[in-house]
Image (cartoon, rainbow, N blue to C red):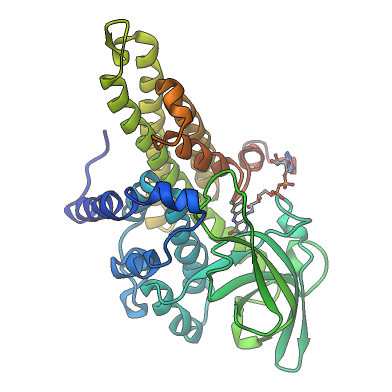
Amino acid sequence: MTLALTEEQELLRSTAADFVDREVVPHRARWDRDELVDRAIVPRLGELGFLGMTLPEEYGGTPVDHRSYCLLMEELGRGDSAIRGIVSVSLGLVGKSIHAYGTDEQRKQWLPGIASGELLACFGLTEPGTGSDAGNLAARARRDGGDWLVSGEKVFITNGTWADVALVFARTGGDGPRGVTAFLVPTDAPGFEAREIKGKLGLRGQATASLHLDEVRVPDALRLGEEGGGFRVAMSALDKGRMSIAAGCVGIARGCLEVATEYATQRVQFGKPVAGHQLVQELLADTAVDVDAGRMLTWLVADLLDRGEKVALPASKAKLFASEAAVRAANNCLQVFGGYGYVDEYPIGKYLRDARVMTLYEGTSQIQKLIIGRALTGISAF
Ligand SMILES: Cc1cc2nc3c(=O)[nH]c(=O)nc-3n(C[C@H](O)[C@H](O)[C@H](O)COP(=O)(O)OP(=O)(O)OC[C@H]3O[C@@H](n4cnc5c(N)ncnc54)[C@H](O)[C@@H]3O)c2cc1C
């Protein structure tokens, strides 16, 4: 069940669904087992226009509305969250930030490559000592003539070992969020190293890395936004990123519902399909409501963005609800499979493992609640 789509939105949805069914679903179990997605998927995502969605044509983008972007994220989330994450980070967190805060030279330098998939970007905010408390990050950048020397460590960085450019947040001024500046750091610069993080619970095929920067020389022309304006860049990226995650979570929940419904109508116990047992129907019904509710909250954010309104609060609500709903959906639907849900013959176990990170990254569920609580009460409980 969904709201009416325009012809353009429906075409995009069906193109994305077709891509997922043909080029993602058949490979996802292997990518998960091998802990490596096929790198050729990146130019393919670019070829289909998925890595340039919402960006203007002059930078190689595909200018569509944000509901269309959510439709894409939902289909990619249904297929494999490891693929959804590649797009959400390279385009969503970095490409869109370059478009919003970059100079015309920066846009021309980076956006066509990001949109085509020739270049991949990563977003370096989290550090070993600062996750939720990102405004207190410790990486530093100091001026050296017309350049900056950037040093520090980042951890859990999606696309980290694959990226050609890293959006790195580093301290250039005093304590707290106002002392942070954003830099576009080419990953082949001397002193930059990305180390793969293996052994993740989910998103196993996705390249996740720690970044190590030792006096990396970055020209001032690669500073993104104002000196001291980096935290604002990061937070506005995360507002849109939370919508993207929420849409991906709707896709996870929908994927779970589809496979569990099919299984429940075929698996026979006590002389009838398990779908005929009321308690199994309850698991499916609860999931169906989660899918629809998550989508409505997510599309509200998309529509507000298209109208140029502020989305920080609705994006937190959508991300909180949809990520918790995706975990609940995967857990409920795994129950429908009985013991068969516990082995990798079916995709439900992978859905559950992949869903679990959604309540953690780009602000944990606790952080989303604090944002919502602050808006309600006017009191910051951080
Ligand atoms: C697979 C993966 C990919 C990621 N990709 C990226 C990426 O591309 N770029 C990037 O910059 N980061 C990335 N991250 C990092 C992610 O955003 C952080 O892990 C997340 O923000 C939480 O930070 P933390 O892990 O340090 O947890 P902590 O901040 O240490 O939190 C630990 C616990 O304490 C709770 N907590 C913390 N502060 C409060 C508070 N004030 N009130 C109540 N509870 C609180 C948290 O909710 C959590 O339950 C990724 C993480 C993972 C796992």
